[in-house]
Length: 297
Image (cartoon, rainbow, N blue to C red; front, side, top):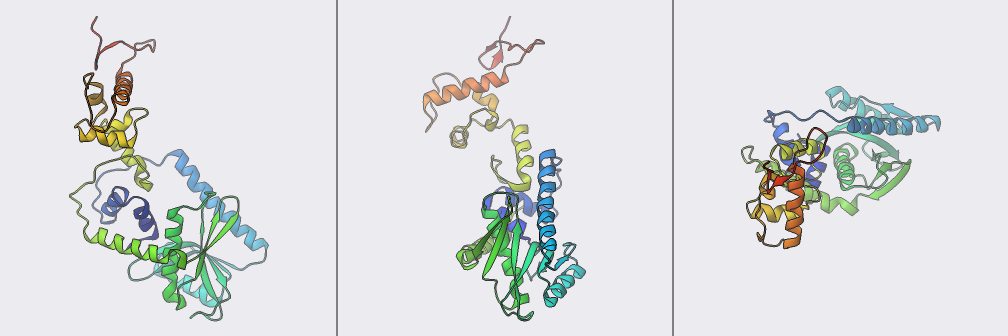
């Protein structure tokens, strides 16, 4: 089964990040990802704190809250349904599933609209530290609207984002539903045609939880993106010309022409590559080079 997080990653990175995520989901990934950085650990902790601050505010305001584990076990699914049937005002970490997808919504809020649960219904709230909405947030919230549909007997007509600074931002589900359904179909096709033997070419970018892993692979390959100031468009033009590493760029002869890349830009990039490859002596001073090699005495 897929998760809203996997779908949201596919929405922003359908080639690289989604491929590695699917490889791992199929238990075919035999490598190792770099340890989570202190910054990422701090951001995760801040996200949990953001949710807890909201829950504390709601409790102080007298609202009823069901705090659930969100582990997506049979007991968790049953606890979510039971809390919804009781009409609890807010449900934290609500475990939801259908035949294709499963996940735990940050928060469900009860609203006045009849449903299979009674004279009330629920909408999902995604809690995010960011101050502005992102595509991934909208995908995840739409996914929880989908997962709520069989329990309610109708699709929620709205969802909310609870952003950094304690700001609620409401959205109409219909505003994104056609786009979301297209995304769901594209993701189905991606998974059906997935070939674990065809590894996508590494490239810099937002690869979700795989970003550091891809950066590490680029460094190990001595990729052109190691050159300070290198643009992705310039990287693509150099690669099309058969220049794929920082060492190969530093060794490009003067006067070489690269299709689509002006001579001045190529000269500056080559000089930068040479500079970055220039060794330093014991005092930290650059050792002069002959072309792409250290200078001979």
